[in-house]
Image 1: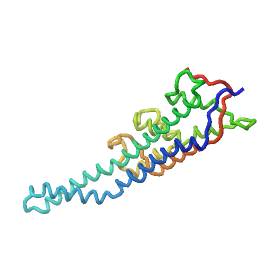
Image 2 (image 1 turned 120 degrees about the vertical axis):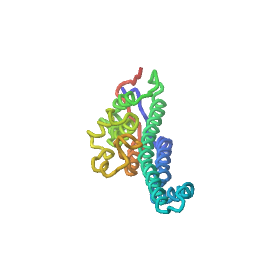
Image 3 (image 1 turned 90 degrees about the vertical axis):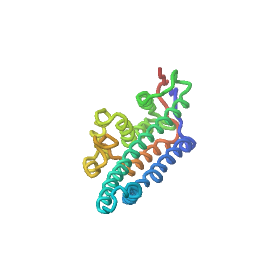
Image 4 (image 1 turned 180 degrees about the vertical axis):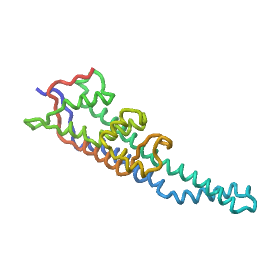
Length: 237
């Protein structure tokens, strides 16, 4: 007899996917475009320097211009380095948003079966692995497990952990071993704003395409339908 179930439906998708879409929209369409025009940032910085410090050089226009150029170059490089920081930490926040939603849904659905609430990822992994049956099926239906274990969702979690723990952590090595795009050698080589000497301080390159992949993977999870049942009663001590 199946004694515990997790139900998914349109109402679940409406509650959880809309905040995810809104979060990603802010990251993609409002935060990332800030860094789209480094040339304008260069010109603004050089002009500000001349307005504030240009008089220090008297009539030496060439030296003043050189100083303004050097100042603007350093400023714009710092500006450009901020983009990977915002994208990587933004993706980390996206995972924690999904994580919070997942705990909320599972704890609500299974409140009569759990002695303590689910509050860590290892417990949610163990829990979901038990829900192998769906209403109306006479055989195993692994949609829930397979969607939860989607490679893009796994990558999202590992990126969030790598941002927190750096390159010496297990998550970063797992990203390398699974050949995740965010640690692709060619991408990292072409991106001069990542690495141990960067502001981000981890050799990780998150791009907008990655944000879209992660958003869509979360969407596939919350768009599941019907109820998934566990063959035995669920207990989480």
